[in-house]
Length: 246
Image (cartoon, rainbow, N blue to C red; front, side):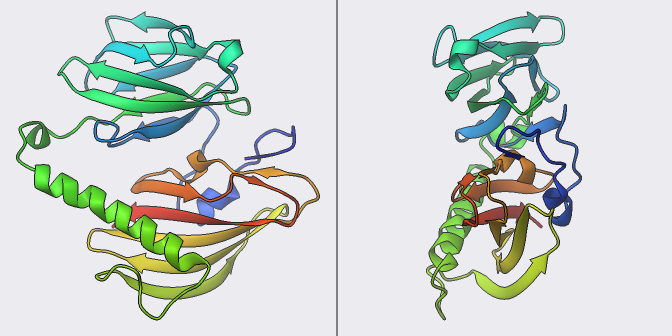
């Protein structure tokens, strides 16, 4: 995150959420892009790397033909790319195809505060490719959608009964120590079958705009992040929802 034009603060927030943090030049492990569009932050000023774990990239097709300047390492199957300057303020969709016939869907969000990013696409398991777990995959995605919906519905006006049955809620209401520019409260935890959700409220304590980045919340076992307002005005509060695997 950043405040106005200052560099990204060292994300104590992510450590407090149980993550291991190293955002500058960090590798982003991107799961389930073969099932749905996944938004990722990339550097708008430096070279980025894109690869598929244990596979090779065959082709990348961006939604805007001249949006990316790239060079392919054919032997390694890795794509090195830089966002064209005239697209630095726009999101760019792209299809990525690997050497085993899997297609991934990415939405690239150029971010000036990031250094060179390494994007690692996680391919589906072989059993999923053979269609043996299609029902389980659909159930998994449905759980993510249901948890996201329940937390959003419950955020501002908690009810005795949640919008969807089968999900349990426990109120935490615990202030989590944060950097001096912002405060964070762990509001509630929502338990599903295979996943659980965490609802936080983050407040900008400064007199300047505070920009939050979803990338800061993506670490091991985190499968989805939703931030209601990425750009916080002074003293403004936003809801942050994090969904994790057990």
